[in-house]
Length: 105
Image (tube, rainbow, N blue to C red; front, side):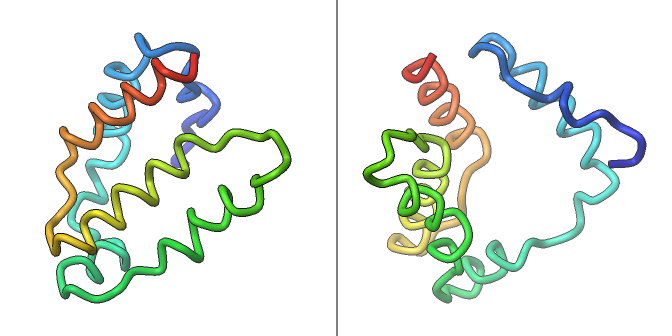
């Protein structure tokens, strides 16, 4: 991505979250006006394709002993937004992921 080594974004612990978020904000600033199709679906109160994107991963992992807490949380956040016809809140979701990271360390 624009000559950036994506492996440097890997989280080693929950303490890395804030620094990585700032890095993502810097990297993605040039693309801030783009609107993901799933976001457009939520804005238009249409069903999203979350089950076919992130939802596949937890389903495939069932019964294997492989945990997929972050994909499961993505699905949960999007499903809640669909159900309540609300837009996802970045800061609220960031806290949910930070908590999930701490639980899974």
